[in-house]
Image (cartoon, rainbow, N blue to C red; front, side):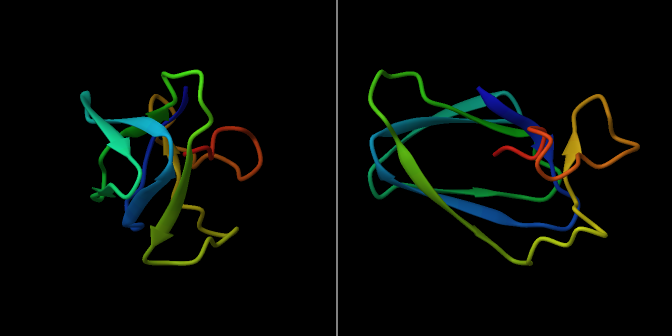
Length: 92
């Protein structure tokens, strides 16, 4: 499991391109299969989990490029400081 963060300015969409992946958004679970798309609204806490033994791949689409000066990644419980890119906290 990776994620458990939200964005204040970044809208995201994820498309499953192979396998199955579970999206947990604000405590609601949705299973994505090949071709399925989920939209992550602003401030929605989200995590993705591969609950199967098969590899799953998905693509991220977002409305803004990543900005090192304003990463817009807020880990739950650490809202005062955005997560640092590459720290493992920026995971989807």
